[in-house]
Length: 472
Image (cartoon, rainbow, N blue to C red):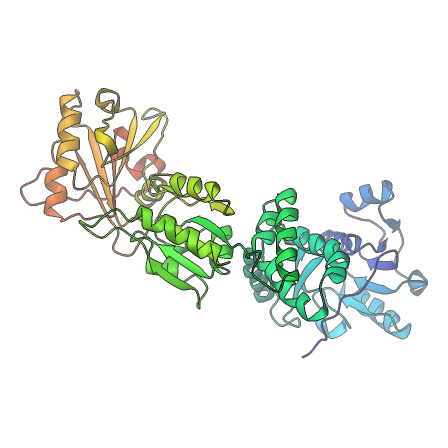
């Protein structure tokens, strides 16, 4: 290692920053966040530094640097635009045995500022030793994406409980207890800001840890996660975080293999999708969720799109709530939004449509939509699971008064490799779908927006697919 990673306690200690520009402003900000008493030495300073000095948040000395300015300091930062001045500051600091950072000059520095992920009191520092600061920032960004925003709150919560846990548990039991707290229901409640539920979950964990028999079972939890339209890069950060800690993953046929690859490697995977022509597996899914959670496992119920849009997520939430199983819902990009973005079709657009309706191609209990309302071309209709019912959908819209030229578009495998986009009208969309052998998963978009061409936004229009003998 070129540098030893250390954390300095600067709270209340004086640090001198030589320089008054934007770089000095950034360094002073980090030092102040660490509690340092900052003195900025420069004849002229950035307006924001001047305002901070006027408010008493730091001290400004409007002079050229002299060695006397280092009296009493515990660390020094040289942040001027002049290398000779920076070298002089570094030399004077070293003479006094003070750690010194010269911005963008590792050779003159005895310490460097890392790229920082701040979830105080959890802090992660990343450094390239001055070789590749851009790469260090990139690594920091990747870590930033993995760590929950409320991780600091979880650390403080655990810290506040340490004394009572120390009294309640013997040393050999504490580590396992804290590991369960950090990755189980207690952490889930804290990370979503529910302190009361976290306290109750902690009490249950503590009671279970104290008992030597199974009088109190450790209860697991369920994460109801939207997998989005298929591209794993469209998963939310929260979805990625929970997939990395789940013990078991229940997934359906709309969840791509690429999404499953983002999950924890050793997690058990259970396919629970409905096979073609098979029975509805929903009751089995409910039973699995309850059994696995009662075994103390963290269960990710992974659904294509968003779990609460034609995903039967509401039924699963109801079952879990009835049986007292903790459940976290993580939204995903629903197929309508993913397909529209993939095809560059706005679902609403000034002059074309100001409202949207999402419907399922297969409606339960014989329920039927208001086809006259849906036949309005200035109202966008997005049909899920509608490929097999496409002829019937077109016939009902035409019977309700929709014109033959009513625009229609089909997006197959939206956001995935092999994605296809067909554009047409009610007069030819069925023939186009048959000619191109469109298969699920596909989304049907109806209304004037389906004819939207990218030229309206100043770009090259998407070509319309056509079949032999079928007018485009």
